[in-house]
Image 1 (cartoon, rainbow, N blue to C red):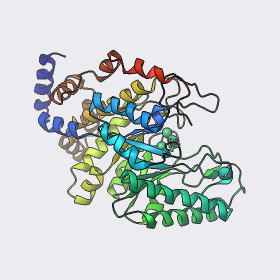
Image 2 (cartoon, rainbow, N blue to C red):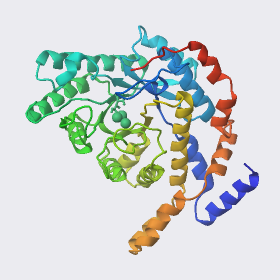
Image 3 (cartoon, protein in one colour):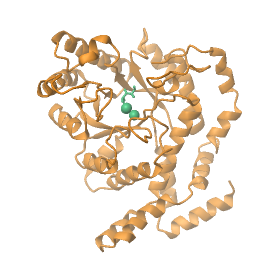
Image 4 (cartoon, protein in one colour):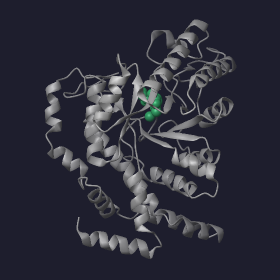
Length: 406
Ligand code: AOS
Ligand code: ZN
Ligand code: ZN
Ligand code: ZN
């Protein structure tokens, strides 16, 4: 990328009233957490394609994640899933991560893969099953203490397939009971991020089906409980950026699971299907980041940006590189929105002017800007190319097949 392209970009942006130095500073602060499970084999209910070179244990997952961070500077933490990432000694996993320049991010309990949970985990009618599920949540709090993780991300598959199968109101109470027990076990630094999803694997009702149910639960639990928005977990047509703005305004947006969807919870690479939606999410976040209310600004600064994807057919490390780079691109574009210009057009009732002020930022090519900030940080200007030219992808083939998968 030529210096000319960047000079032109800078000139253009300054003329629109955008402080490019400020934009660059903001961009350098962006951090995206990648999920350990995104480095392993995954699939659909039809088939899991086993790939050569996939990590065989959590330690190797962190090695692969370190490549993504080394080349992009964007992904210094990795979320873990228990028991997929169960190890004897979490202190050892933590020092391994640290030796690679990484940290262990959110701890994700898994309450959806054991036979006993067929009719529910924390909302099972059988008290013994609920006990077992709640104990797993408590175990994850203990693990988070050892890994130094701040966030516990909770997603429950709990729900029913047919009317009458379960008592919806009783299950609501059991969910609250389990979460309160876990909440009490957390240290004051920890956060409980409550994820919702409209359906799947349960197809009639899901106990935490939408943001309102997750938000209500968080309110009842206390300030350390917040809502996690997975972009793939909504009914078609849902306005996710509206949900985001609403939750920030209530100071309860804890984080994201980014991914793309075309139909349902497709878990495709973020930014591939609807990049404009991702841009509009960041537009809302950046609008709130400048709010006069310190509580709102604080909520924004604590948002955990996490990827949650299943790389079924694609190579895992390039897929993760593509993901974090796509997030960075849309974040960069959202930083180009002249919020005052939008506000002004909106106040004058200039509907098309306001819409134009938002969309025009999306239409800029931010490549020269991204190249420059990468150069300034000593990173490759094209991280994907740098990875494909490195020997890493070939070297890991020695691991063979038989990598970790769910
Ligand atoms: C499931 O649909 C959720 O998105 C969860 O976040 C889940 O834990 C994650 O996808 C790993 O399976
Ligand atoms: Zn998720
Ligand atoms: Zn999901
Ligand atoms: Zn998803």
